[in-house]
Image (cartoon, rainbow, N blue to C red):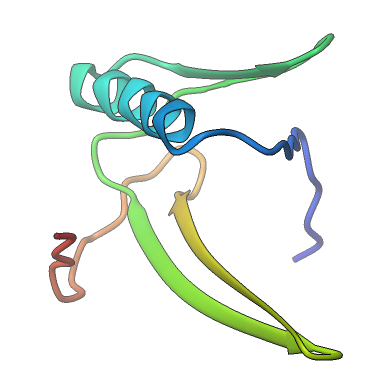
Length: 93
């Protein structure tokens, strides 16, 4: 299935600012409210269903003596359906 990016944003932020953004998304998810992503003149609003697939990936990239670490959090769902949630439960500490 082809992938289409409908919104993208990347910027250098403080840990506190990142935490605020994540907290806002978490609050919207918990309340069952749509999540709006906006940067400049671009924006997209997504309604996450009651059940979705939550993927967490930690990566290390090394190139030319430079090392970069990342944590990627992804929420994914098929439009019009809920995920069945049969995988192991994730714990984040």
